Image (cartoon, rainbow, N blue to C red; front, side):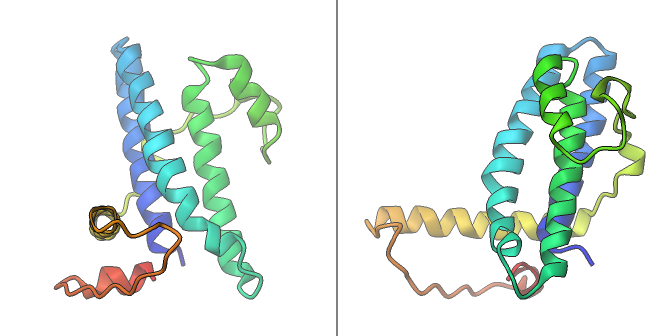
Length: 167
């Protein structure tokens, strides 16, 4: 029952866990930290949280709101666990304010990519949606259309399914 953006962020998170674990095992700490930074800002904050806002505020569909909350919490908690070796005190403090099943982030189970679902097709679909959003934003900027001003947009694509799933 996950939405397209949920499957997309879980796939991105799966890749992050796999790559960061591999980098840490090879003592490539700078590369691991850079991947964490990029994931947190570029995927989680810039896109996923923004895409979830309408579902989180939707009073009529509590089930969709709860799904978004669970995925947000799951990915945030796991990302904090990955970030813990780099920022132990900050991650512990944030972890304690989240719902968790362990006394401390230090003794919580480290994320395992094998236990995180990956949705390849949905990731491709979401990438198309994000590319379309970027193209629309670029075009609006080129035409000096204020962000506060509504504009009708018509999209002609052979990938109709991914745009109806994202709506």
